Amino acid sequence: MEPIVIEETPSIVTVKYDSTPYELPEQMRGKHEHFWNEQLKINPHFRNGEVFTIQKICRNSEELQITVAKTDYKHYLYTIRHEEKVFPCKVIFTCVAVITKDNYIAFGKMNKHTSTPGRLQFTGGGLDESDLKGELFNLEKSIEKELMEEMGLSINPSYTKSFRPMFVKHGGLNDFWAVVFELNVTFTSNELQVILEKHNMSIIGKGEQPEFAEFLLVALDKESVHSFIQNDLSLKEEYLEPILEKYINQMT
Image (tube, helix red, strand yellow):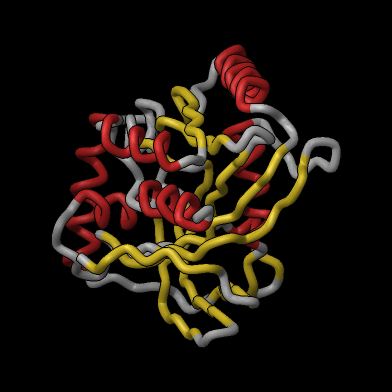
């Protein structure tokens, strides 16, 4: 496993779509199909939608350019559930650290119907075709969509203090890449908690299941962050603790 690296975003970050069909060997496609059918017996909520896997990475001090091709969710699920990394699905996704007026950072616990039930992570998700403009993905549109779906928040001038790409994450178990945005809001942590819980209740009221079973807010100070890291034994997205550490180290 490669070490997890959290870096400041370069001046230019682009994700480009390569329309050349992504082909897996027949034997590997068979493994994916068998695994997928077994997973559907456990969780029939899974849907085999589009996923984009990284084909090429070009970077220097000023620019990061990532080229992706289209594959599917069963390829992604097989990758994250198997130690063997033969023809892996290597994704890039967006996520967002939401920070309140009183300096709390918000994230959620994934619901039981998701591929990673109980995992703590920022709101976010993979890219899809609706994010494409020509051959380039609109990363801001991608994360704005996830914010609305998972938290009921938009980039609204009435409560948005700032919104920007903050970090790039790479390395870790599958060497997935992420562009981590930061959204500063004028709500206090208590006000945001109420908003997030109302959002989930509205989803449940429609007969649907929210992405997050619950929301957590942690104060961005050394004592609170270290206490959370040491005492909360929940499964965590691999970027979560390094980014929390990054934030409190920037304060010193």
